[in-house]
Length: 573
Image (cartoon, rainbow, N blue to C red; front, side, top):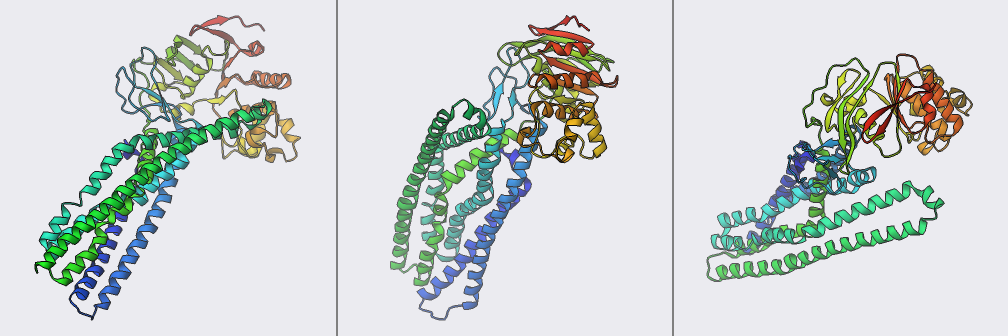
């Protein structure tokens, strides 16, 4: 699964970093052998051209390794962040691509919440990371993964290979007994690393989870500073953040403590043992006359290359294990792919209606919300669905928008069977006005042009007139160029909701899905929104879910959602 997050460019840069590390070690080894053989034999005339060439080459290779790894890491960070954001924006909720239909959900990323409805035998459904979790994936996890992949992995694999390559040279060119004798001890390092990896894997996973929790709590607190202050919850939130920060600190300290234990064991004990064993072999062969002084000194100098893997051990448990855990988390997020959402295989029947909901059932895992629900909305009509909060009105709209996958039944929107479309294709069939207004930092025009970037100013004003908010925008200091503030804080809630409605009109999509459009506005704004909807021509089809009866005076038909099914309501005009 981790291959999903790793691009071909990433693999190439990892290989190149490792190659440069080996090249640097080879040139360093050449310099050490030249020095050892000449000094050991008493020859004072050193081959300076070769020594200078080797030193410069080793330095350039080492510099290239650092430069290439750093640049590749930054490049991969940008790519991963773009892919994570794109996946989050384009496919809000999708099944896992190869999820087995088993009674037990497979293990998934803790950042993803697996779901399986009662009696549902289709693929396991996973919701993508929340915005706070996505920030953690795009920052800390992405940085750790790219640091591990682009900077650390190639160098570490090369460092593990360098001692074996060095000993092959020693065995072939200098002394067979010393080479093979030392070779027997070298595999202890990777074996010890694998053992410590198993031992400290849980500690690394715990540290990553605590960092994720702290990020979520911290961002939630920042986003909700106003209600926290209004309710006097600041001290409680501060205590919660302090507690979570302390848990994160302890997890990091446990990880670093394990890292230090490994450094002491491998860098201290093993390196000393390897040096003593090597000196014993070299001394024995030198004493017996089987090894020349020059070769003995060359082998002694080459011991620095045999200790190469130990220089990577210090970062293994912090960079290596943290990077691997982050890679798994990112891969699981990116592995959410669009598949056929209908486990029952129910075909959609042909219909002339703009919206056709055919025997749709849905279960969030806490009981059935929609139960074989059917609905036909004729083209050009306005239909309201009533009901108190929690009965499934928003679930129905989410199914129509494609942000929830179908579990059973079929939905046809503007002649298209949603079961055959991607989430992007489904979203393009309708325009949505949500209960919570979606306005972004910028101007009125910026927010309107989210629907149509190429729209002219006159088209913007026409959409505002349709939403009955043009006069108010015209009275603003800069008109269309007036800033709305973060989340529309510089304008009223009623104005923000009508600008959102104007954006839906501007999109050119003739099917409007409205989720409680008047629930959070004042009476005057509610009246303006109702009048705007009433003035729409026959080319517009409107489906509105609400618990306010004031909207019923403009609709052609109304239904009440009760126990997962629709019951007709009388429309008083």
